[in-house]
Amino acid sequence: MFKTIREDIKAIFERDPAAKNIVEVILCYSGLHAIILHRIAHWFYNKGFTTIARIISQFSRFLTGIEIHPGAKIGKGVFIDHGAGVVIGETTEIGDNVTIYQGVTLGGTGKEKGKRHPTIGDNVLISAGAKILGSIKIGNNVKVGAGSVVLDPVPDNCTVVGVPGRVVIQNGHKVPRTDLDHHLPDPVVEMIKDLQNRINYLEELILKEKDAEYKKVDKLGKAN
Image 1: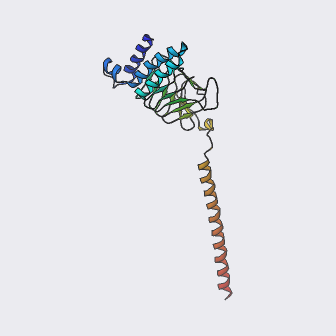
Image 2: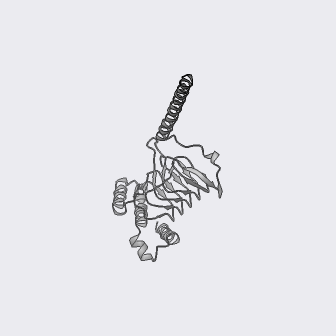
Image 3: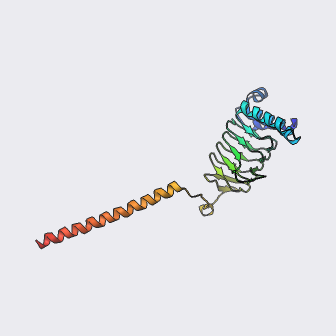
């Protein structure tokens, strides 16, 4: 465990230019505190002391603002930057050298049993506010854009953005728009489109009626 913690500290110096010295990192980085406390809680969880594990987890949440269920499996070199509001569910699995920013949720959809949280590969970057939900796999070397909501598996070497999340870059190449037709319907947008269509239809009727009225007046004028 201590070897893994050393890897976590090393990751901070590699990925955060604001890190100045080892004392500052150990005392001031809440993400590191959350990871260390999680590793202790996870040890108790694996030994069957689930209540003690949950108490440590809740203390960590109170101290850091980061909630990690003690059942979650987290690899080495994981860096939670800033970290406020991060939530990591019980059956989440996180690989090595993963970077997680504030507001990230690795959660379930509320419909599944057993493995109900995501599996994150190695060298993944999850930007601020991203939500990855359900028992899905995020491949190695994936970047998830800020505020994205990812509901489907993502292959290796991809960049994902949007709500719902869609692959925009794979293996260094842009993905054509035709491959991305998997948006969830937006009822508000559909309603606005329907209202706009109705307005256009009524405008056409009014113009036709006005045109017919002008022609009628013009005929009466000619008759007189």
